Length: 147
Image 1 (cartoon, rainbow, N blue to C red):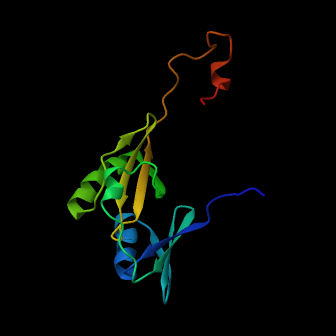
Image 2 (image 1 turned 135 degrees about the vertical axis):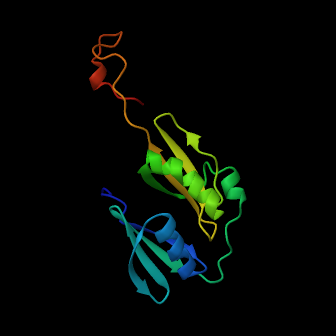
Image 3 (image 1 turned 60 degrees about the vertical axis):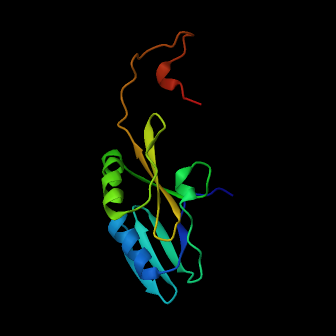
């Protein structure tokens, strides 16, 4: 078996209306369907299901203090949107961690209203290699891949 792509993911929330507002107004998702205990959203080529769990305990701020290595959902956005998200999150009081620089992209971790850990990933524009042609050992630079 081979997985083709992520079709959808689910998020447990205590208040469907509040979560729907967050995911549509802040993250730009589109509401596709309302069911008694869930809201189905779409974005890009993916889907998200918000599941009502009224007794759910919200995640704590400790998740955002050191977000690496914790279960989360990550969304790719334009790099400019990742940069702009910091001001948006600050203005709306959304808890977030300072961006983490991974070289070719930055990650911005934040919490939804129910304390679910989320991440924005923004890739920088790809630049042409400094030197084209052959590597010191004679290998073709364009055919080489990073590990």
